[in-house]
Image (cartoon, rainbow, N blue to C red; front, side, top):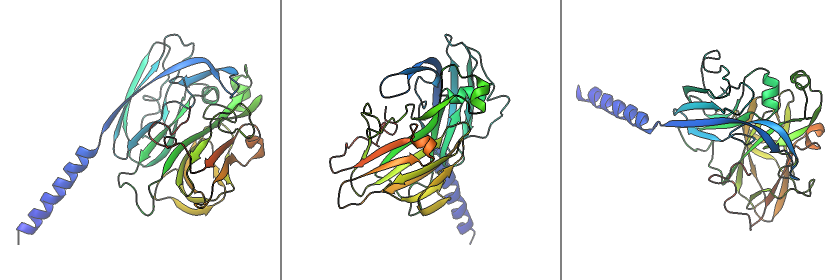
Length: 313
């Protein structure tokens, strides 16, 4: 009779050991770069502040339970202090998220305890200016349980981040109250993936008819809510904050507040080629840059939405 509790204890110990082995530590180093960056498809530039030289910054993808060992490098040629604020971790806002001067490094670690999609951004003063100049990125924390009926495996995945574009020279105070606002940056450019409204746009999202396309949508605008809607489609499933527990079905428009995110799945008709426009249905946002075209055809590029092509550059 005593062997059964012992056997159960051994099985539990083995399971815990297995879980610890599967957890990984990811070393992530991101440099801050202040530079002139193209903010539209015609190549017009603006002075932006970035993580890694791109908007959004590098995509960080881990599994629930993993540890992120992070280092921020404020490059010596910069003029401003910068910091890192990860929404995906539980940390110390004063010690870990403190700003560092040009030429300095900052290191800290956190455990990714909750699955979902999370924004990271600069938290240095003025936060309004640092974020609206492009200092944001995305962390995807995949659920440790993997895919399931509640969270099915997608055929393709894309990351879309909507951010602000302000007039060059707009002050921190003007940005905070929304003055001199010009438009919406989609992954760093207005109408980035919209050849319908911008003749200079050369990239669109692609999938094959009937595929499950998963969008990790992050609202990096500093003041404005986003109203994310698939024109000519319906969100098959929505997970608020990307957590598999927070599931909705058959949704038309998702309200996403600043510094928040959703995961949404779109399935196109399987019997014919179609197109969707993924828009911020606030017309102020849509017609100032916040539209993305998804083209569904049998000739879809097999690489888009897979591997390192979740954020199309």
